[in-house]
Image (cartoon, rainbow, N blue to C red):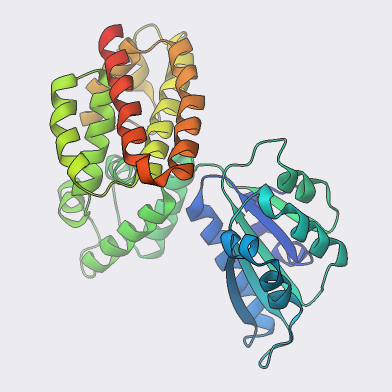
Length: 339
């Protein structure tokens, strides 16, 4: 059975009637929020419930480990919450077997990355009447804005729309990053209930993210000189390749959306000035240039390329850095040729 993430909060009691849950997609922060909500509500009834985590690679090496975790008794509780991390079709058979037997004292939460429609694991949970499948796609700016506004209202902190937009941009559209920065802001604003954008700049630790953000923006603009300067710094350090690929994907998705809207707006300036929520003023010239550089057709080509590169990096960790930077180098050259 397929459920949308927002349906869970609306009726958590009905949701918890199902003991087998698949969370798949790129939004790890949303998966964490759903898992936290599940655990909080289950432990209200039994705070002695046992919590276990297993990784797919451990199951592949020894399937008995999974069966033992599920069917072995517990000294402290009659129930268990078992998390299976980084799941894929490789463990379809044991999961299918367990789902058929459906042990009722187990809550099995399975975490997976992006699963294609033909995925056996995804199809198993989508079609089952005894299990739930929840797609966890990337948050929109609207989703993140709602999270920020709720948290700031709860803590009686006043921020302008521009400040919240700035905060969301600097968190790379990741709700986990956003929540971390909100915690810092709440601590900083202990006796200061109105914050300005300069306050945020002093609080938020986005120096690394800022370089990464500039790296991607200069790449998409085809600014080869600036791009190479940041490239030399990033190459010497540890880079979260998957995170940066997802940041790139977010930016491409936004450009695709703007390209579609551009047809009815007259000029790019009119489009950028009319957006709600507004784009942070420092980003406007960058986005304007990127819209001029990339056509709709070329932007659509990049999306599957990003997915392919992410998969290659995961499959080839020894040479993932070379794969990653080679992709960005080619992308920057394409942008430079188009401009």
